[in-house]
Amino acid sequence: MKKTFLVLMLATAAFCNHLIAQDAAVFPKGEISTTNNHTGTVWLKELNAPDSIFSYSIAVASFASGAKLDWHIHPGGQILLIIEGTGYYQEKGKPIQIVHKGDVIKCLPGVAHWHGASPKSSFAYIATTPAQKGNTIWLKRVTDEEYNSIQ
Image (tube, rainbow, N blue to C red; front, top):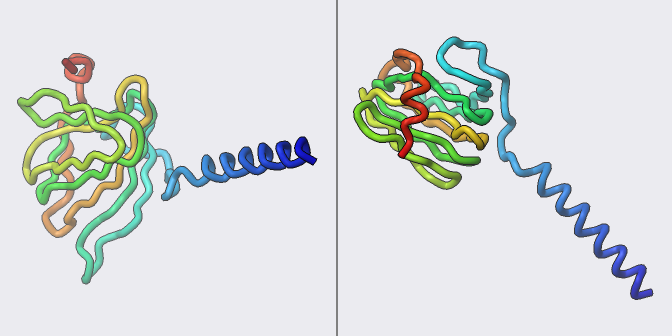
């Protein structure tokens, strides 16, 4: 009886761990981005398109290790809620910041910046962007020298 109970408990624990692992991502990963504004593999999933009542775009972006967006500007700013992994965020003229799951990044309006995964970690965030202020302005690629300038 004790052995049967122990086997049943271990099987239940294994099943629960399996369910938890499957439910780790709250939102689906989305589709691989085919735009020419990033390096590496990036998945995007739009959660909310702006409309006449709610003018914010909300999306999930997931990055394979080493993947990164090009330098860019959000005319109305952007808020990033980091939900997975370790990534980098850098504003023009400032050092790279290392960001982790649970961090909140406020990308100031009109400030050139880039963000992406660290070399050894995947990375994901939920991005909230005010659409009424204008579309993202894409700039140049992040160079290897810039990406590797972490201190």
